[in-house]
Amino acid sequence: MWNFSISRSLGLMARTAPFIALRIAIYFGMVIAYVLVTSTGAGIGWGIGGLGDENFRANSIFIGGLLGFCMTAGALYLMREYILYVVKAGHIAVLVELLDGRPLPDNQGQIQYARGIVANRFAEASVLFAVDQLIKGVLTAITGLVQGIAAFLPLPGLDQLMSLIRAFLRIAVGFIDEVMLAYIIRTRSPNPWQSAQSALVLYGQNAGTMLRNAAFLTVIVYGLSIAVFLVMLAPAAALLYWIPGGWTSGGFLLALIFAWAVKAALIEPFAITCMMQVFFRTIEGQSPNPEWEAKLSQLSGKFRKLKENAGLAAAA
Image (cartoon, rainbow, N blue to C red):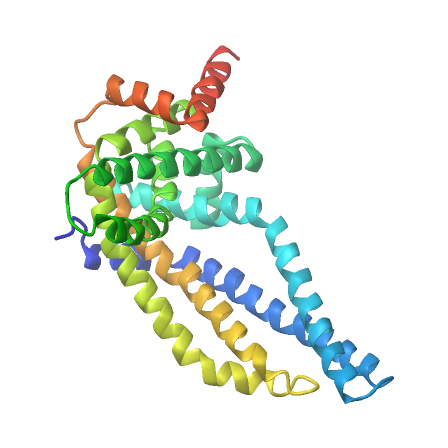
């Protein structure tokens, strides 16, 4: 069925409670930012709308709320490197230590300790972000290769099945890029580009096992996320009822944002912990296969870029 332990993943999450609390503070802070700025924009629109008729006011409220929402989304987009560096990579660093059976220091805070580990692997947030983007590109190429192999199978109705598989795999791959970062941190290599290259080759060698487990986790993660969304629809609509003009149509959007926050703060780290278990157990005793390295070099320009950066870092 699957190759991870749900109970162990939950136990590891409990042991990284400071990071779970940090994730909750950050992602639910984002939800609050969306509500406050969107409602402020709608309120300004309501005030400006007083200069015209009811139709003009309704349009002003909508435009004001939309501008507030977009401004918040833009500001949070600019924070993505910081969140990856401090929150996601830091949490992964602590999980790696615990999975490998190393105790965390008692005389240092968990978040501060993790920040030191990440800084040793990636000198700057921009380096981590660049490595992560290249990893995502190569993972997409590997997934495309798996789809291409399946397309040659002589099965009836395969075209319809493959369209469903493509959509499913695109979602599943989203849990794997952070597992590649976990490998980089685990190897303690001074050359993160080289470690990323090795991680991707090892992933390619074991893509079937990884994608099968990612598929199970995709169902779990999005099933829970949809449940949170449905539960939050009514309170979200009630909250937005108090926005000037009764902008209750935004209840759907707020419930969606809240579900995303729960997914990012609580559900995703659980899935990544499960995938880390699978990857580390699967590659134990393996070495990167030169044939797979050659295949990825031919398949993906981003993999070739990783190799180029690895060479430059080694020569520096």
